[in-house]
Image (cartoon, rainbow, N blue to C red; front, side, top):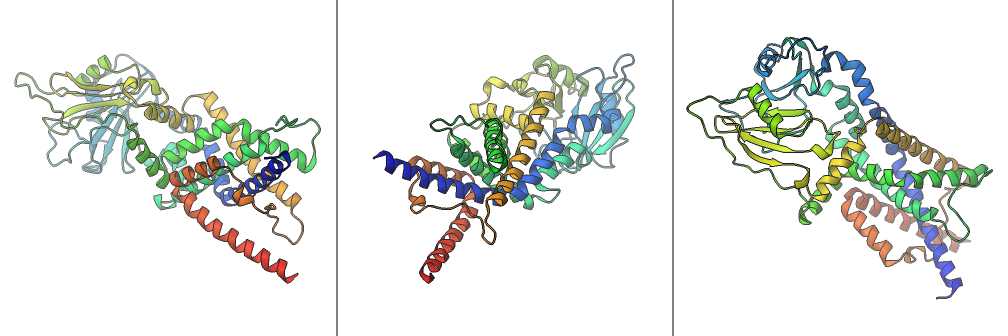
Length: 451
């Protein structure tokens, strides 16, 4: 292929990628603006919750802690009548309160009220990180077993802000909006990197003194690519818990053998006729002797033959992730899986999801805030460039050169097919967009004939 032919092909490809980049921005912008703004609010969750709930989450140490059972027993008086203990988070630091989570009987399969609770559903093999929407948390002082207060799980700012960010305070049926935005933002990222990629004497870095539309374009591209890795992590982790794309990703994970080893079901305790079952304090002591040094979540057995379940209550230290089950009478460990037992996919999500939520500390929050600000700049600057370029009375669509749709390489089409396969909303909206492009092409041909 001659240099002239190669240049024409590259020009056709560039026109196609510009066109796709424009459509991606048009589709994603409304939802992406909301996601960026709500995400930037969510970044400050630790600071906001410290102000709102400091009196519930923390206490002033005085004397020795009471047995955990005293706090659990006293918390039942502050819980809704008839509700049962789902799990307990004992204090990790000396200033931490005891968190006792209550839920309606049978609200979820992994909710347990304690020993020998007839009529409860069979327990799930693994306790959940997040309480159910109906849960009420009673906060207890571990030193004198007094009630600090109670709060519905759904009323915590953390849960409110997460719901605002993921589905705009609507039901799960509205999550498709954020998933659609994430899908097309991924397209924007890929096409943006391709369009920015330095060629020849270009460096890809904004030139000093660049002004006007050219200056906007250079900073738009540079900031978008500079935070490209963060963008990829944020979009990928967001898609893993989306409805449609998340299901495809989990299916691919299972097919590739990257699902984490399942926690065994059917483990049971051997009743000890010489002694009763472990109480909350005894179970806490057993858990601390086997678990890493991290805040714990204890779930009591649902029956005499069931087992205690323990997992981490703090996701900011994924390397200490573990699952523990032990006998309800002897405390003998029946199952333990730590970080080393996680698959590569499990490790990636265990790190990526807390990073997405800014749970790794101030540097994580600062980086996410910078990312959100860059998303806002990219979207706004993109539309500023559009209106500067658009001729009055026209749609302002980037010009599509003849033969543009046949110019991409086989690898590019393979990547596009993979993205559509993993992101169903991208496939559906992309098909609608293809029909629109076909209509625009036919209208353009009719106008040419009329002239």
